[in-house]
Length: 415
Image (cartoon, rainbow, N blue to C red; front, side, top):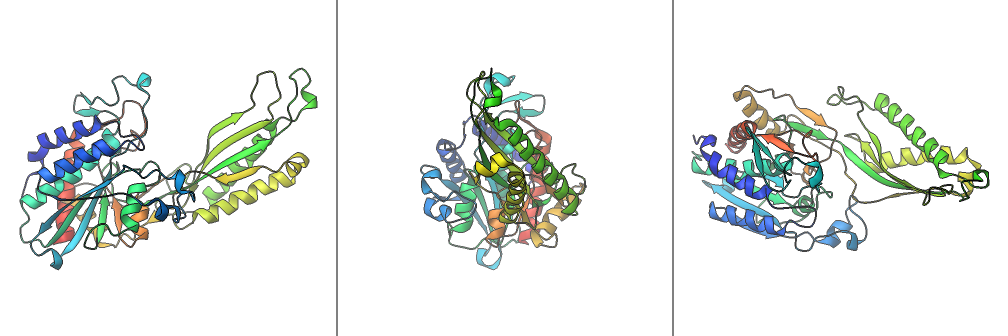
């Protein structure tokens, strides 16, 4: 059996070069060309395709206006390796996203897109989320192909774009028919600390707009500040967050201090220090539990807002606007008895690691594949606590461990 550690040097080189690409939203093309070249050089049959904005606009998770969905010049890259009689076996998809969130260089100890090493930790934007995981996909597939034994089937390594913006590449892959064969299951190598993740939380993105009445700060009684009205709405949403935490339970989420978080991530009010603030725009991210839908949760928070409005003469006359914006994440959940989950858990047991399935409070591309009938589990190196943070890093021994487990899991599934 091929030793995954023998691919260490090539894997390091691949991930370091990939981290050096500044693959923020819409800027993935050069990195995807690099990935395609590496896959081709390693003997993969390479496929490339772009998302169709019209198809995505018809999907409830994406904006309705195609002009708000950036798909041009953002290819998905898929590499295929076949074993034995591929039609006689299963096809396993190994997926990772190449895009990253922006980095603020002034908050980093080292330039974010110049990979560096701190002992055995690789530092750089995307090191954990999730370019190391994508590299593990590539070389785990290559390791399996170098020693396939009597396996029949296929492995597809897929590098997608736009995950941080709602899964543009994954949705294109799941909703379309990019390959001349069906995919039976998938593993997405998100940073799960080598835990098998079978449930992901969804999220509802809403924008709240309030109108007050301006007045000079010397005579504030002549105006109507939006701030007290916003605070009452925020308190009502916090009350509903606590109620939902107590009311909506899930066995995989019992240990979270806040299971379905509600966070006002952006608030912009007023326009002048010496004027009563008469406008406010706030953007809120609302957690959606596995088993719920975004629409159901949206209705709950709309009702909570309506109760606040009904108790306010001003808000009743100046109705707040509360509209969706951006991309909505539906939650996802996979039965732990699915063969792909059992394959990953068995591989973890062989490696003497905890194989207990878990749920997470973030969204992921798994939902697109699960909705398309492709059972998908998250499993990969690194921690979500490193994702989106300055000085993002990943412990390299964990990356190699992930490769060992992934090879075994793939072999388990394809045998």
